[in-house]
Length: 171
Image 1 (cartoon, rainbow, N blue to C red):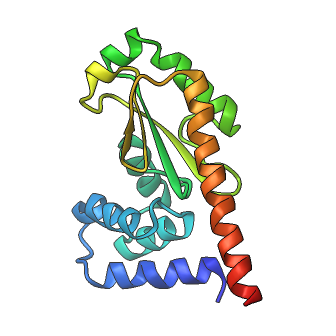
Image 2 (cartoon, rainbow, N blue to C red):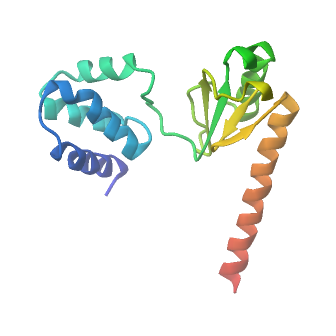
């Protein structure tokens, strides 16, 4: 089964538990995003067919609300804070460092789907500004050099896991 077919199948399972009321569009989109981590195109098309509304209406509603994503999330989600304290302490520089190091822009995912980058309004850790949250782990007083260090730690952990897998396979 292809990825598209699997998405359609799982979307239909979500839709079967819903009524065909146009007013249910947002909760349906929320359920789809909870399932996949984003809104796949195939799922939005199935939703339009299910609710008997134009595809453009589904897309219009989905793009209006900031909560919806249109690209698969990364395995590791990076949330760079741009609340007032973080912005004053260099939050924009930190976002630029993440973008440079990951080779993506805010709202995108790396091609290997390892990392996704988001900008958030506030994470409530103003005393630690500028703040980045990686996989729900708060990183405070982040600098461009610290961004490199965080990514290096992920690389080292990945290499360690890779060695364990190779060793287990050779046993």
